[in-house]
Length: 226
Image (cartoon, rainbow, N blue to C red; front, side, top):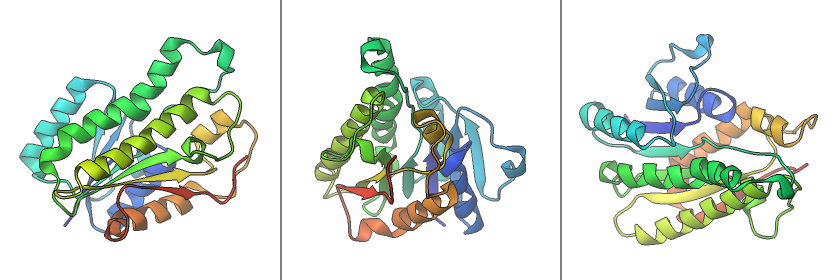
């Protein structure tokens, strides 16, 4: 039975991923700042931890849990993210830092601490954004967010090269519009063509099998952008 770690699981795509992995018999560590909805609080195989990924001490506690109860990690889906929608001229240095802290720095630190628990077949999937892909459409107000996702994509490529002999594999899925709370924050009133359960199904299949064909790839997954 594979051990799965997913961040950002209290709503949207992350919550739908929990449901799919639970239904298919995996052991899942679920990490998010908020509690799971009551209706999903007893999913089979899920250990949920209220978790702020930006707090190093939380990650150290997580590592102790993995050592004692899981021993290894087969798949990581870095789904937690932060978005600030604000005109560039109003963005502060703290705004940039807070977005990069969640979307890049904390992802890097978590991966670093998980390295001893990976094997050559482990797979790290970073959930990015089409806005972080060079040459894609860009949107006003999302400078910090899009820049952070571009950085996450480059991190993915570099780590894949650095660990290509020993594993794990690293890939980035750069998502387009999905009907999530974050989309509503970025584009109020916009309705995407893809719902969280549909995107979660794609991510589930890719996380489980994509590393056989891909390593170090930034893959756009987008039917539309606003």
